Amino acid sequence: MRKYTIVILIVILFVGSSIFYIHSQTEEENNNIINKLSEQDVITLETQEPTYIIMKASAYTKSAEEQTYKGITKSGTQVSRGTVSVDPRVIPLGTKLYIEGYGYAVALDTGGDIKHDRIDLYMETKKEAFEFGRQDVRVWIIE
Image (cartoon, rainbow, N blue to C red; front, side):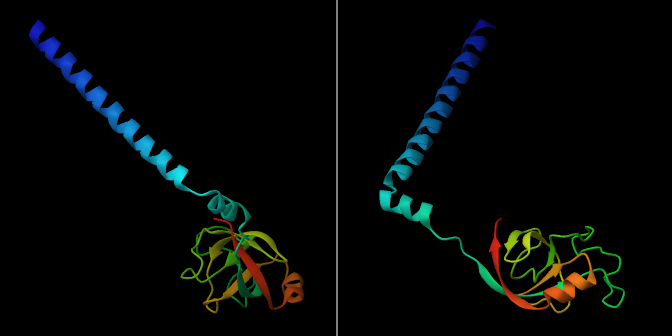
């Protein structure tokens, strides 16, 4: 019985030291990669301008004529300020955005006419939607 206990302890010690060795090698490789970044690379990453997409924006609201009176999005959520319709081939559903002149939003809906570089912004009232009209906006993808 003692022989088996000693063998098991030796195996555990061997496996444990192997895991520690592999972990320290991986950590060393990561540190080498980080150290290879030049100071110029770091400065470029920190000062890089945020990128945006210019999109053709329109506005929508709950409407019987547009068959959006129930206010349920393609994602299954209730529409509210900050809900936008997109072409999911361009901006995936669930993407968080910042839209010039509108604010923070989440791509939760799609629309029949919303293709390519079009985006439809949800407004609380028809008056607000008509006042917005159609305009080109900058859309920043947050995540």
